[in-house]
Image 1 (cartoon, helix red, strand yellow):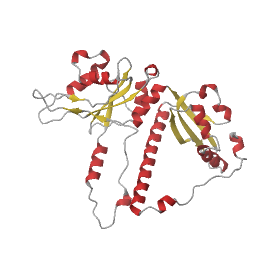
Image 2: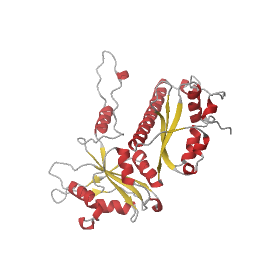
Image 3: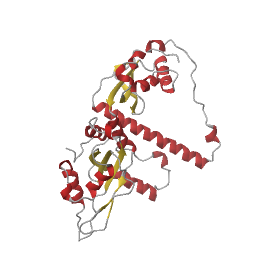
Image 4: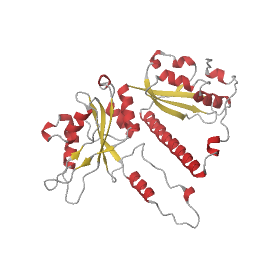
Length: 330
């Protein structure tokens, strides 16, 4: 495989594969299915953009310096070869020196050095885009920045960005005004990370994941009144409610199942010192006034090998990702 330094890019010419104008598969589809497919692809693209924006905000929050891409040896250095990291690719132009993001990613499965080489290899789709923009003088220089992360921190970010919240059911009030939590089945009997959150429509801390999308002007039709459908009303209601992280737990000595049981179903006497805040909050939430429901509580978890759990700064990692402090972590 031939390799090129940045200096070689300007003089190197090759045939570039371009996208075809039409999609035969789409052309053969009925109009309704074609519209649904386009909407699905548009939704997936929007989700990717949201994730990338979240990663950019993490990189910006730790104030890393951009490094100029000069040669392939940059990515062959020992300290990059086997590291996991969050990384960003940036560029500037001859007209504007400010460096802007082209791409950002969490390299949690592939070592950083190998992943970066793919972005600067003209035979790879990622590298072809970058090389073409430098050749055509769309861009002046290309830069990269990275933050090394541990395996446990990579799993923590996965917990935040890829794992869905699970609602915790509760019983009907017993003894007048006390409810009990009903944990779901299927909680692993293994070590890992877990988060506890609550739904609060009033309290909305700033978060990179906040949905700021407005109405679609393309859906308005002249002479028609826009009456929201039940599905649209449900979507608006769900988007207006935010699940707020309040605790990140590390199931290292105990299993995920044991830790969550001790949070939600154990006697107050079993509180460990570090759990006083979160368990006190959960216990207080079980005491409700007549006709008033308790706060909706949610959990999420991810399995992590025990040997990796002690590495990294997991609480700070999650706080940077969500954009606000965890209320019940010391």
